[in-house]
Image (cartoon, rainbow, N blue to C red; front, side, top):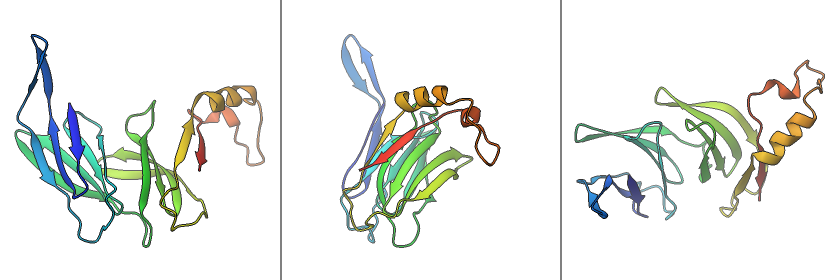
Length: 173
């Protein structure tokens, strides 16, 4: 499958099949999430929790598009807080329904569940909210090794470092 979104919010998806080493493209599914309030050219498309869902991002909205039986259904899932905008979105490597989202004010870890974003964790980063060049990097391996080294460490609130099922190191730069 292949999906694109342009700077105006027009999107299209295709199913590409191979037959005799030549790609065959099924009829494309397409739509538009144009937003007159969003003056940025930044857009992002990622697959949803199934092969017939895509998530479309602009600076101000997350739209979920479900394609079934030749029809599309678009739903606005999430907006960042007032005076905030999306800067970067990355899917969690080991949990496809979870995303890391950087906004101009927060770093969020969310789970797409029942057509809603459930916030797992959020953190106000207190960096310049006008800097749209902010990005983040995820580190899975080194932090996982660190958690194994300190797995016996108990904290004041009684939690154990190894209690969480996964550990991530997020670096905003």
